[in-house]
Length: 140
Ligand code: ATP
Ligand code: MG
Image (cartoon, rainbow, N blue to C red; front, side, top):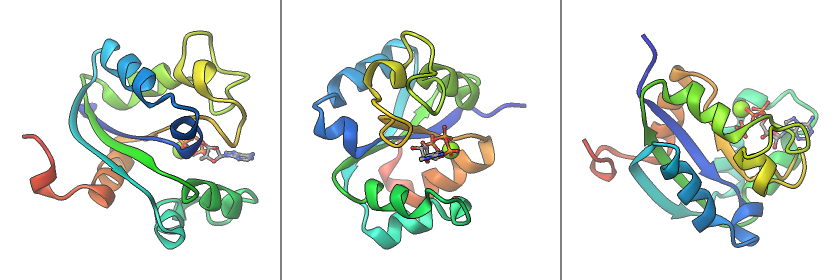
């Protein structure tokens, strides 16, 4: 059975571009409900821990520098088939290859600056949600 929750971040590029409100609107218009939400900024070591899964990749250091470079919004989202449906809503990793009307196509500008994160599995959605949110910070 597929899970009902996924985890997202609005990344520093989209926050700096003033796209936070439009992106949250697009997410809620697509039927996702926020179960937890916060504005924060990652320390470099926190970004490194969050993206540990990518630590062998050539873009890891740049990714962690970028993700700790400014404020982000982190959220837990709920909807049937949440992980898969949210990946469809955000589109391909590279905004130039993402379908029209996807969040990355509309508000991302490059492979590195692609506006949003979306969990890629139910297991990672749980891990990533737990990374940011305690129990008292979530709606039941
Ligand atoms: P995310 O995890 O942010 O939702 P994703 O699952 O589509 O994105 P991943 O393969 O998990 O893509 O890569 C994590 C992030 O690292 C991407 O969102 C992107 O910003 C960056 N990234 C991925 N591949 C590259 C690359 N070849 N060069 C530079 N940055 C990259
Ligand atoms: Mg990913």
